[in-house]
Length: 212
Length: 227
Image: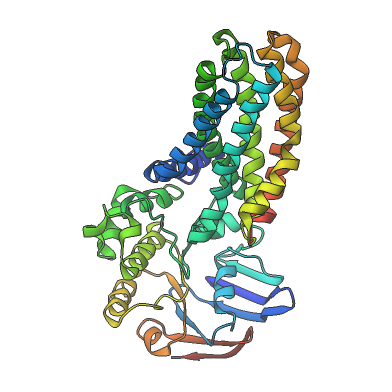
């Protein structure tokens, strides 16, 4: 069974077709990059996979769970890092992780593990509002990794980050254990280090689905 | 935890909002300051009048509570949208109405604190008799829960709109009328010396509205929350 399966998925925002009949499937452990210009439908597709938005038509399944009918089961298995940060400025990194982790079956060891994996131990007691953009992104990845998700969805992961931060993130993400990784990006160069498959989207349709 | 009850989830969400509110205490303090200065200014206007009209005192208290709830609940959901954390809430594996209940609980706690400060200060500045306070609290607690629920759902409805603060103020009033009419009448009657049994019709109305608005909010919220 594929880890993620999209069949004839369309999403319309009023007259705009953000996705138009997209059919794709991804196996367990596969790392896939979604590439394409602004407005190609990359973020919309990832949001549908993460059960953040509902498709207008078609069906999206994660580990066999339907994103519309079983969103809670989907969310339990998907770790999402969005465009913006989900961290609360007034809470420390650790408090943010504890808050989000409390909705999953997360042990104190898991907290330590993600802080170590993302090299955030030094910053655990710092309020998220005081973190730099790169550290904030890392703490968002820590949050997404906390629940040991089977599918990791990273929307525009590398945007706004310098090369060192990109290399650091790639290093952390390379050590994933059997997780399916879905990453959107404008830059092929940056995702090539992380992904083996590239799906090119343009105007809501799949233009190319190739090895990268 | 995987087998969490809705109430546990909602309590955690409310606790998170309260911690954030306390760490940014200036907003909460400004609501408290508004409530207290309103009572004080009213007392200046009625200086020298020993026995105030119960209707006037009742309406003053409700005006303070009503505007405090606007100040509290305007930002309830819109702050999450403005900071992008709404997507974080949306990514949580829980029923969407648990998030609404969390926001309602947060609103109730904040408004309850404002209510206590308002009622206590009105015993000093508006000459409300201490013996009236317990019964008055019953009316206001039910009213505050009603307002927190109405405010939370209206805040959710307008969270993606431009000019949400203005929209909330306009939408909040018509939906609050079924709270404000029995609420002001019941409080007026209690201040004038009537007993709790005599305001049962108004209390029933407030309780019935509470049940109706909870049911409507839960049914409506999923459609509001999912983008």
